[in-house]
Length: 355
Length: 212
Image 1 (tube, rainbow over the protein chains, first blue to last red):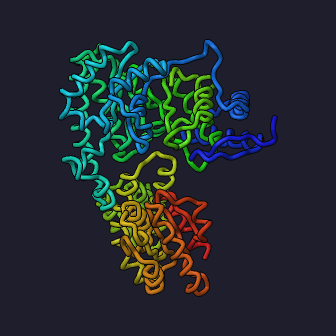
Image 2 (cartoon, rainbow over the protein chains, first blue to last red; image 1 turned 30 degrees about the horizontal axis):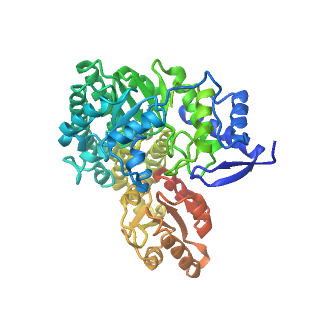
Image 3 (cartoon, one colour; image 1 turned 180 degrees about the horizontal axis):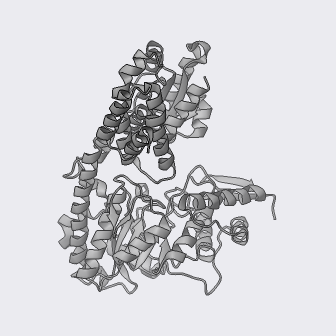
């Protein structure tokens, strides 16, 4: 074992730490998750296993044969044609070319397409175009092909939408008005999610992805759950993935409930139960990366939350391992050393069903 | 449940009418204003702060509690002045020069008022000297600076440096906060405290004032 081990900070900076420092970060990371989520810490052997993965001198690590899991696509094909500011490489290709390249050249388990804004609201006025595009591409793909976007409740507040803006009302002390605005926006968002979902189901959509739910707080999360339940009734043949935006549902409203359960403050092992009850086929767990802590600290935290969520779940749990989530550093181009360590740890120790 | 527990309980429910009514009732029972403040209102806000830290309550509930606190304080303030009870302290709050983002700063202001502090809000895009001049004029104990942009963060250093030259006895303390600001940055520029959210900012101010 080398005295100094090369790892990264949560912002991607390369640092060297001693074995003791990494072990201490792992201990502190799992303790933080356990304290916040009121869940068990990683056991001593699990912490040791995570240390071995972090300390592996290889640049890229992986699971053993037989331990591989499904990787669900989360807009990867967009990385081909979007510019550097969007985390992409700016290759001039169409959506179809990008999706087929991702499927056939990269060996994707699932593929997906989405609007470049990646929100459901702007899809509504161009739904016929999106349906046509989806249909044409789906005729060419073999792997399951999803349509994905984010609920993004913020788009329903002024000046972007019709509802009063809680970010202005709350600091003005207008709490009741802020809550009413979120409830009104939640209703608009739910309708749009159902509208888009039903239209896409009409052209044989193989799966819908409600991505990054709860980014605007608990009312955002609620809209996705309500739409999910309605779509399960209306188009039961269409699978739906529901992914969260962080390990914790932020209480911007604070009082909204689903099936009598308060959403604000839910951690992954609780989120998965309401996502499951709403009818999702896969729960996409997310744990935010702290840029000021090491990847060892962040990954220990992500693994701890993952283990608890998988134990609680009756549906597959696929963990988000993109930039700034799951222990992956907050970088436009996540480094392979970190991504492979995150993937291996979440699968082998966190028992994730997929990524 | 005694009257202090009732005030605390209704404050935690964010019921400003009930808190005002119970404060009136406590005053009518000739309980000292300071006792009502400490054992009813501030005790209630402390419970709220602890729940906020544990993610049991969220921003809207804390803001409702702060409004209820304010309703009680409105009743108590004339009595506190008459009884010669000093206020908990004054805090000058502002978003630094070049930065127009004031949502976080406003929320911190509400939380501080809720905790019983007098807040002098100098708004956004506030020039460094304005922080110093206002703090001296108002006899404030703490200057709180907010920034959302990395490009405006250096203004915090400027305020700290100006204050070093014009702060007899080191009486005025500085606190910084905002999305790009960190504990390390606060230490680097020589600020006395870093408040990572509204509840933590209240705790920082309490510690700064208690520490003299």
